[in-house]
Amino acid sequence: MGKVNDIVNASVLIRPIAQHELPALLALYHYLHPEDEAPSDVDLSLVWAQICADDKCHYWGADLDGELVATCTLTVIPNLTRGGRPYGLIENVVTHPDYRKQGLGSQILAYALKIAWAQNCYKVMLLTGSKREATLRFYENAGFKRGVKTGFIAYPESTD
Image 1 (spheres, rainbow, N blue to C red):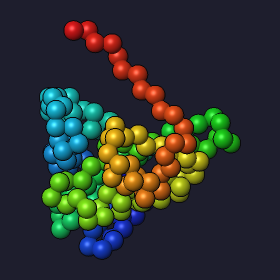
Image 2 (cartoon, rainbow, N blue to C red):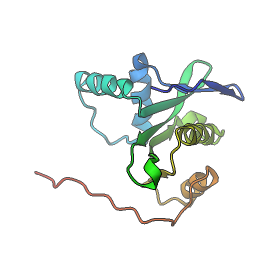
Image 3 (cartoon, helix red, strand yellow):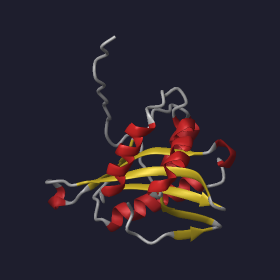
């Protein structure tokens, strides 16, 4: 996971999520996609071990008094254009509902961007499915620009 030193910002520690913290991370993800069906622990443990071993995957957590209360993922992707500079993709940004509107999401996104710039990324992308203006402004205030590019998503065809 992350190679950059942990930082402390206003009693919140932004740090890599440790391998043993999978249950706490999954608890946060429930607030992101409450309708998702929970896969088996065995499957998730294997995926999590693979993620933890990949130095291009960064899972950051906001730790408040020893409790994981917010998270985001940064994946740094090697690239053959833009002078060979990589780009970043941020996903799974979520803060526990009891801790929202306290700046934790902004702090963790700022940290993820700091890591991306330190790894020479020429851009960082973030997609959101939210149409809420407050959410879109949150991402703009965190440094992301709306309307620069058009995003498209493809999903596998349903076999139902």
